[in-house]
Image 1 (cartoon, rainbow, N blue to C red):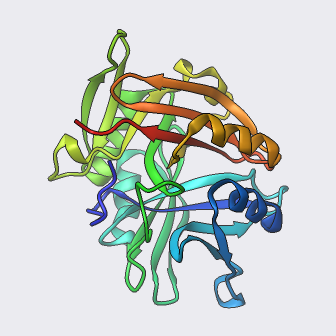
Image 2 (image 1 turned 180 degrees about the vertical axis):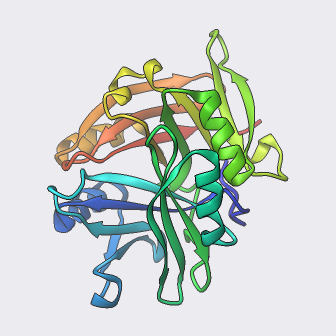
Length: 264
């Protein structure tokens, strides 16, 4: 799972672009207990979602005509500017050039060759997320892509990621997990999924999706419905892994919730 030391190439930030900041705050506050720390004009109104005083992600208002509401994942980079060249060399492209965010860090946005958006966060004063793996915080990351081997090659060239083939217990399905360079599979933080294997997600095109930890998946999905969200993929139990479901917030941003099984 996620490593709180955030080695290079590991997820260290997640944020939400939404057309309705107040509505999103009400939804995620009701679902996970998050509170909003508003951002000032010096950061373009970019705010922080917190849980018990710890940052669980960022949030910004994005007009509907500009972009669809979505969650975005960011991976740690020692030098965000170097990532520009690495991405281009591997066949991707920049969505926006790296920029300083006050003295907090440096951020850049990119598209992989299939068109999936991801970002990098080069930490300075802000090392990244303040809490992970706890209920209501980031637990896992998943890429839906048309070509898993091609995605593995791309991110391997950009971040040095290593992959492992995980056979799902009781099935013939093989899930590709990823972990940072210089670490072992015990620090896997995400997986690569062929879009066609999950039709509900294939319709959204290539994309990264965050998983947030919860105590009870079915209760969380029910609460999301009550708060105006919807179930995007029904709850399912994966032997040896845990129970998970995909959820859409009231404005169309998709994410997953998961209760992991205790690690053996």
